[in-house]
Image (cartoon, rainbow, N blue to C red):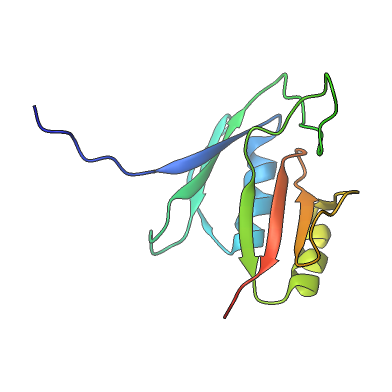
Length: 127
């Protein structure tokens, strides 16, 4: 039996406010809304060149702790986001509602928390 073709469609983040979290990432990444329902939103680039991000309603959402200690909700995944100017990127992300994580393990990467508490990393793109 031939193996069917697979492609990554989206990464899904849970949130108590899918529309609000989608709006944050839509502005951060300059993407567009592809699907919008009260409990499910998908955003992506207009050209469809890369997989998008989806946001689903999780009423009992518990934000991860970063870095997690014993017994704390651990981060299961995070997003790496390239930006032309790291300092300007941090300023823009925090103006949109992100917060800078207390611990910063690398000089050339900034760990931030989105409005639902998901960690994501900004790093300066190579060109």
